[in-house]
Image 1: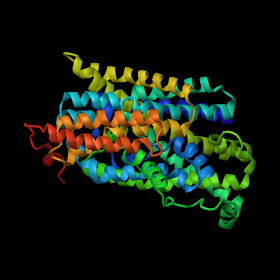
Image 2: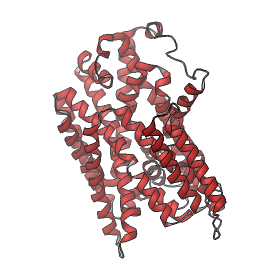
Image 3: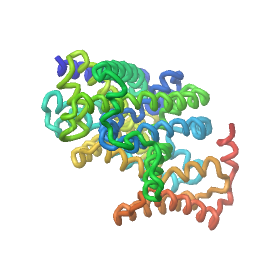
Image 4: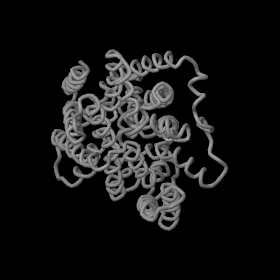
Length: 468
C-alpha cells in the first residue's frame, strides 16, 4: 500500500507539471512564472528552496549526533539567508527586470564578469541536486529495497519530467501544494511521537552535557567553525539563481520582500520540527541510531508506526525533496541558456531560448545524478555546493549593489582570487574553515581591483538599483 501511494504521488507530481506547462508560453514564463505569483505562493516557493533532504534527514541526523552546534548551518543559517534577501537584495534586484543573477553582473560590470560568474555558479548546484537525488533514492531503498543506483535514476527521471515541461510554474505550484503536505505530515508525526515520549523532562534527560549549547566555546578554532556554519548558507546562498528566480517570480517588489521574510521565518519554525522528531526517536528507539544516521527518521517511521503515519511522513519527505530538486535543477539550466549559450548565438528567438533551457534541465540533471552516485553523504554534498558561491559571488553582488566604486576589475579579482584561495585551502587542509579564507580573499580582491583600476564610465547604477 505504501509503495502504491509513493507511485501515485510521483505520477501526481508529473501531472501538476503538465498542467502548469499550459502557462508556459515564453522563456520568462518558464524561468520566472510570468512574474505573477501572489504572496502565499511566492513565500511557499522561497520556503521550499532548501527544505529538502538536508533539513529533514541530514540536519536531523546531525542534531542527534552533535546537538544544536551541529545544525547552525541549517535551519538557522538558511533562515538567515532568506531574511537577508528580503532586507537587502529582493527590492533592488526585482526592479532590474532581469532573468538571472548573472544578467546583473553584465549590467553592473561587463560581459566578462557575467561569463565568469555563470561558470562559477552552474557547478555549485550539482552537489545540492545530488543530495536530493540521494535522499529520494534512500527512501525508495528503505521502502522497496530499490538499489541506490536505480533509485537515483528513477528520481532523476521524475523530477526532470515535470521541471522540463512546466518550468517555474510547475515548481511554484508544486511548492505550494507540497508545503501543505510537509507541514501536515511533520506536525502529526511530531505530535504522535511526543505523546509516546510523555514529557519534556524525559526528552532531555538523556542528552549529553552541552547538547543544547547555541554559542561556541571561547577559542578561535571554535568561533571560526561557528561563523562558517552561519555563513555557508546564510551568505553563500544569497547569490544563487534558485533564490533569485523565486524572488523575481513574485507579482511585485513589495511581494518579493514580504515573501522572503515570511519564507525565512517559516523555514526556521518548520525546520525545527524534524529536529524534534529526531530527538523523540532517539529517546523512544535508541537502537535505531546504529548504522547510517541519515536513515534514522525513515527507519523509525517504517518500523514503528502505522500505515497512515507512514504515508504522511513519506509524503511530506517526498514533497520537501521534490520541491528543492526541481528548483535547483531549473536554476543552473536557466543560467546555461541565458548567460552561457545565448550570447554566442547570432539570432535566438524566444522559442529557441526556451528549448535551450529545457535541454539544459536534462543536462544538469544527468551531471547531478552522476555526482550522486559518486558521493552519497547528503550533508557533505550540500555544504560543498554552498561554499562555491560564497567565496566567489557574494562580495561582487553586494558591492555591485551598494558600493558605487566597485569596478569590473574588482569584481573579477573578487571571483578569481576568492575561488583560488578557497581551492588552495581545501587542497592543503586548514584548521580554520577554507571558506573563511576564501571569503576574505574575495573581499580583498574587490578592494584592490577597484582601487587599482576604477571604472571610468560608471553610470550611477548603484543609486538607481539600491535605493528604496
